Length: 540
Figure 1: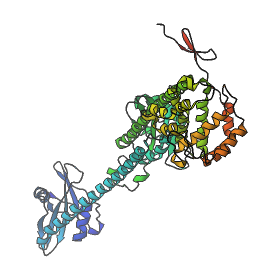
Figure 2: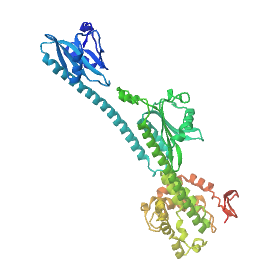
Figure 3: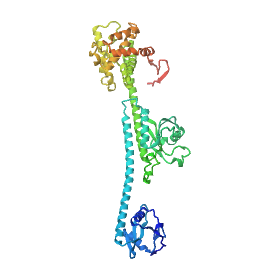
Figure 4: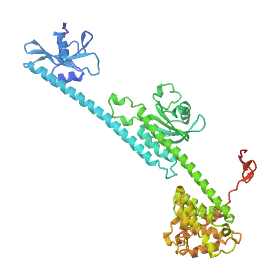
């Protein structure tokens, strides 16, 4: 079967297929691109170019899968070169040229070498593209690992000041960057339908807000409950059913923060940030450039799970600390019940100690520990007999020896309570003296733990200035004078100096102190001191 068309000058012919262009460059002549669909061959380049060849030549090149030559006339040959299909299925492609040459045996090997080099170049291009994709993925994975490591480092419960809000504030910028979004929000529910924003972060500095509060409320109302059980991912919102409801949002991911202790809020990531992919030109790299997908949802879901776990742990820690404080209060009540004339002494010593610790630069956590230690510094008096504890006259040497046992007794009471272990130095050593004449161990100077030296100052001040049944409290000037005179002998001179410098605050604490009302039991119910209802009793 002949395929005949009218020939034209080679200079008028152009073909954009890279295989054909390469053949034309090497052979310095024009090639026509022929394609066969079904049973017909069609010229896809320039139908008016070339004539007089047999279609069987094209079929032979396809069947043998190699370049074929056929003599047209002496010194001139057809060269048919089978081409790869690329992404086109069920189509046969052949490049055809009429070449004048005196060495026809070199045409096929040269054409094969050209195709071989083209295949290699395609493989190289594909490998480069895959390498770019791999590099981009590794970069994203590295950001995710850095984010997760940073979060893990902050999931430490030793510092109670690092509450959920503190962790979220640190988390959002890192999470937004790792997820590649323009804005990310931590939401909590104001009521059944509405959402409030506790924290928000934007990739674009200076942006006021990507999403309005109305948009947030709509998202929570529509998707909040679903997000508590699984991540909600929405793309192409500008062209979908929510285009009018959420006009500023192209795509978002919503994930709930839920734990055993309850629902703590949501993480909302808004609008894909595609700036990091501007250099990814290949179509395979642009498929998800403007979408949020599995990778982003998985990362945000992991962050939400870590935050929810932290919130649950904080709730447990708060409950534990509340129980511990209740236990401390119970022990203080036990002390006061044994020695009613010193009621309020432990509380005042605790408050004085906390203020002195603040003046000395103690951290918030250390100040709180000093306060709790002050509450229990006399816990050992539970083991002192009533006759000695409540005696109004001068104590005998034997009675004083019994009183001196209360620091050791307090240590014995608290030593097995791991949570209160930090109290032991203050409880055991608050009666040591700077000159070594104190008890129970006769420690001198700074050998006495700081907590013990600090409580010794505030304990002595409250003891001197408080009223007792057998005497009135000492005048302030006299008590301060005794402290100043005893600095360096009975008390740490630096602590005495600091205590005197904050004396106005100490007096304010003393003057404003009021003992909390003691609940009294009424038949059938409990009531507060003012008679208000507290808790109904269950009938026996």
